Image (tube, rainbow, N blue to C red; front, side):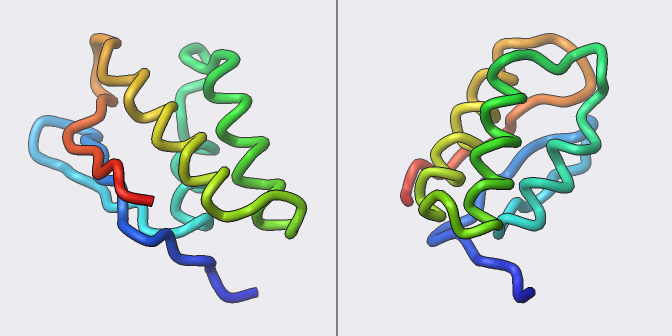
Length: 91
């Protein structure tokens, strides 16, 4: 299945000088799957479910992007290696 592209990407910071572009559902699902298990919470679970549902055609792409965006914004508030660096709010 071809990856469904977001209208505009979301950029997240993985480390001091590493920025990752989340441009589509596949990127978002991979990012969420790689998230450390001890830092997963309800927001992570909700974002992953929304992305998987959109991938399966059960939710609109915009809902998945919004859920991932919310997850990324929430991570900005946390200390640690993974945090949001720049989030484009365009859908």
